[in-house]
Image 1 (spheres, protein in one colour):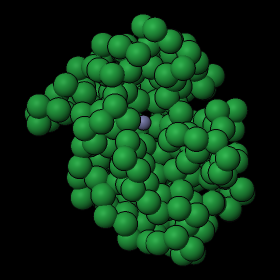
Image 2 (tube, helix red, strand yellow):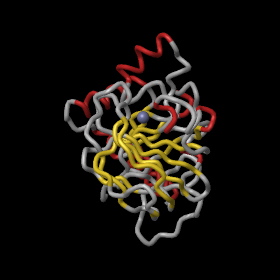
Image 3 (tube, helix red, strand yellow):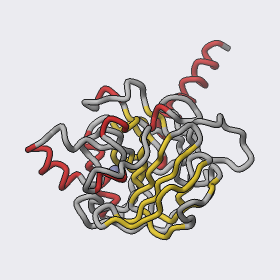
Length: 247
Ligand SMILES: [Zn+2]
């Protein structure tokens, strides 16, 4: 009987591993991105685990995406990402200055972008480099930037509810700020926009105010959850800003 149980448990573990694609190497992220770019289906697209020890600035805990989430193609503080072609060139000169301030979720153009929590829209505007962006002040005094989006579904001043459709995902942003692939850049800051400084950073908050979004998921650190209508969530925490696929 014990033997049978062990076989069942091992079998279940094996099944789980085949579903959760573990991206541990940057070369794997490259590969995934290239395949996405060339319109081929990437097998690991239904969710994976990023091992923090592979990053120079790790979250210090593993990131576990739900299996039906869109994949992350560039994590917080990664030097790789949707703008890797540009990022790499720049990183040769200044490795510190180009760390990624947010998380890039690979989402097809036109896909729904959802509010990660209740809040109020502070900005809805189109920037020459970043493209269309929304800045929302969420419950818990966290400012979220939703960047490279397409059509706005809310406007400045609107009150939004968690899970509400706030925008469509944009097409690829062919600038040094957007890279060559369609994605949502999702960024959390503890401060609002900086009105006095110049350049694109004024919309992103100050460098020191960047926060690792993986600290604030409703499922716990590193455990983002898909938004489910009617489900109760902790008020100050975030659900995924993208719509998950139906399993
Ligand atoms: Zn990004």
